[in-house]
Amino acid sequence: MGRACRCCFVPPYLLDRIARSEDPEVRERARVSATLSRHARLRRLATRAAPGVLAVQPEPATGAAAGREVWDSSGTWEQRVRRVRAEGAAPTGDPDADAAYDHAGTVRDYLRSHLSRDSVDGHGMPLLLNVHYGVRYMNAYWDGDEMTFGDGDGRVFLSFTRSLEVVAHELAHGVTQFTAALEYRGQSGALNEHFSDVFGAAISQHAEGVTAQDADWLVGNEVIGPQVTGVAIRSMKDPGTAYDDDVLGRDPQPAHMDDLYTGQDDDGGVHINSGIPNRAFVLTALRVGTPAAMRVWYTALLRLWATAAFNDAVSVIGACATELARTGDVPAGTPDAVREAFAAVGLPR
Ligand SMILES: [Zn+2]
Image (cartoon, rainbow, N blue to C red; front, top):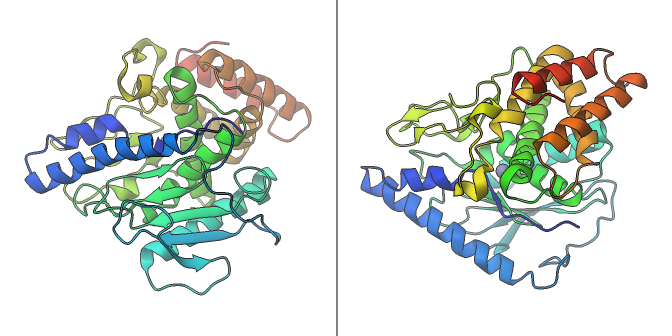
């Protein structure tokens, strides 16, 4: 197993910006969310002294599908406080617990039926989901063996469990951890974020029955609250245009290598530079369809490695497109579509 990231849905620079809001309530929630995220990270890392050993050893899956377990943090900053729903159990009546359960099931079924993958680790790993974490916590994250969701403050962010895309994005961090294990900083980290956005888009488009042409390609639009004038946290199709707002500031994502972020914030821009490969994925999907593009990208994820940079991804994704086109698994024009998509964002092969 690769080293676990603590991969948050809302980037740290966004929470820091919200923490400067004029609204004292919003400011306070953002500050607490940002601070407690960092503390939680340190605590989690401390429990991981032995590399490759999970903090909790989940029960091995006995049935055909990985079991889901939903836990209610009940407003505490702890995980696995109270188990409210196990696999196959009746709905709890709590919309957040039930949404987390349903969305995790949709992701699990997609992995199995479309990618022949048994859960995030490929071996039926149980899916542990914590809901109602903290007080109006403005984030959701994967931290190596489970998922955790805040309720949001209801103004800037809504509950994170309500979005299939958020759940798919976070579980995809698990898939990456058990495959390429892309290091969560710099370009490899941006690729890690990129693959999660790709899974989120592909799975939500499949569930909603929309094509690449009809999709909005927005990330996080379902959790943006009423106090924000932006449309989403990221736009895969037009990076840098998701928001320009008093509360959130301006979307910093580049759409081309000319504008690559080279600073130290956000682990070296993992949520920023992901805009560049994201746009290449969209351009490919617009030509060959999201399912074919997803097949190519997933095959590449199985071959990439921890320190892979953008150029490595371009060559591995290109090689996978060529192989899959030769076997007839994707349309014949896919290799050209991939090459031209990456060239359009400044990544010629
Ligand atoms: Zn992420």
